[in-house]
Image (cartoon, rainbow over all chains, first blue to last red):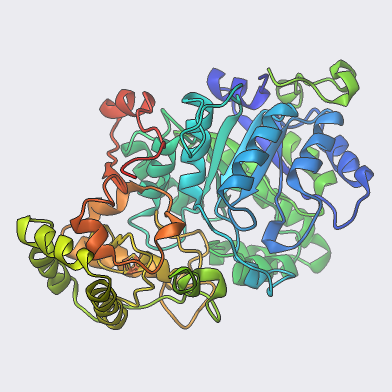
Length: 321
Length: 191
Ligand code: SF4
């Protein structure tokens, strides 16, 4: 299956991904509009799966809409809402609908979402789901051992949080995912570049970048409210004091601009770290600002133009290749 | 039988699994494993116990009570303790068998039950202190949900839990090729 994300990673070009959050509603245009803002700027865009355990349009549906709008999707699938049967059938559907990349993760606990009364599933964990997908694709088998008639071909991604405890284990946890079959990993937000660089050196010592491309998560802190929210509520994000002082030190009207500038500087610093294969830009509700962030980071839009052309897709949906 | 199994499953538990800090120090637990290891006598014991449903019920109840007190055991029937620093992964609210999620608080608290430390932070501390840190890099297979409520000791002594985890995975650039072969298929084993 054609994947411009896979091609960029294989060619050693700096990969750029972003995020499309599906709407709380049935309007397909919301996804299309967000996709259009990103088209031509990113290799692929993650389509989140009930992010934060809040119900949204499914990642499968929204990934198909993104594909129709000319943006290559990375369909996120969590273990929170489905057991092993549903996970595997959704993975097959993704392949059949031409979704070239999947990102497999454990998922947030429902207790933090809008249905805390719901049943947490977690029949598999994130590592086991990656392992399952790899077995389906490369061994042509389900978890049960039954053979697949037509094997899927997606690129398999995972996530890791370099800053969460236990500090001595995070790089090894990523190694487990790489061995299980992850070909790329996106990280939690990086604000503390020196700490991330130290983690990357562990990751390199384990030989991970050779088998699993590391894409660093970044995002602009565009107001003090966002800063406080990220610092206090997004697990495993460390906002260094220097960055906080910097944003508090400018007049309130300029915090937005300063936050974007800091994000651009982070991207530039990350590009210098050996083994960093790309950046994943998360800017909730600020999709329109992503092209600016990327162009100020010298990430040339042409280079990142996806090969998927909406007109080239029969009925809007290509066949699984 | 069936209802006993369902009773123990995560979903129907009043407020789900809750992190449990083991009451038995790591050293004692690793030593205890030597006593309970699969050998001719324990295998013989298992076959004797399994011949009598009454004996099996008492034996299973004994495992339940003792391991609940020491490790917060929830009787998943396929014990991972020997590879997790003797901290029970099924007391993780997400029942993760392969290590912590990304939501662990900066001070090591569980994100679902912040009054408790993350079981995997505890597991890591205990395993590393006992010189068994490598165990945490084993890939753990998915849980067989049919085994809830069964005695994991009997399943272990009878060899029914073989292949539950892989050897520790190793990093290092020189070994990259062996891992790229992706020799680890996840098809069912041992059952
Ligand atoms: S048998 Fe299962 S639930 Fe009990 S201690 Fe072992 S891993 Fe935990």
